[in-house]
Length: 172
Image (cartoon, rainbow, N blue to C red; front, side, top):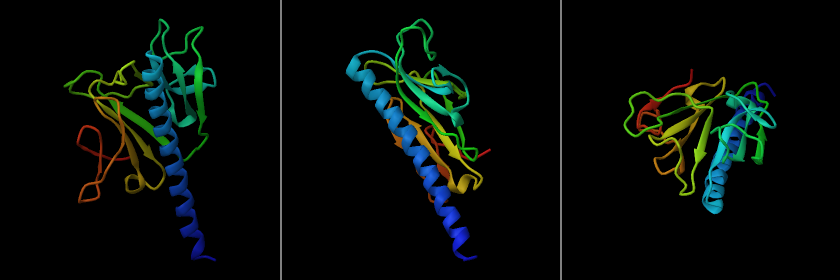
């Protein structure tokens, strides 16, 4: 039993990480698809409450039509299309994005907005980094391309996690 427990714990952590990654990737793909289908803007934001955006992605996220005056926030009349609540104290979910092509320093963003052509407001690309207590070895990235596509981050020959900018990524 003492041998099986650590192995089972690792499998459970991997399963949780995969679930979070798949859920956010699906939400981003859904938002992009809805923006194209509706010929409008659709955003995904970090959840503060079930009806408002915040800055902490580890609590979950909201997908909503974003045609109001304030980009990345739910204005009166805008509809939440999808809610995802994570409630996982072991999850560390952050992102870095460049808002213009060629800008030097990526910054953390509380939302990503897809337009009618499927491109995002992250014109210089970006990524979401999923970490837990196991560190960079178990981490994952969801890379957002210049065109708005969501792609799984890969690892190089040295098992370093590669982000959307082509650099390596580590957990905090």
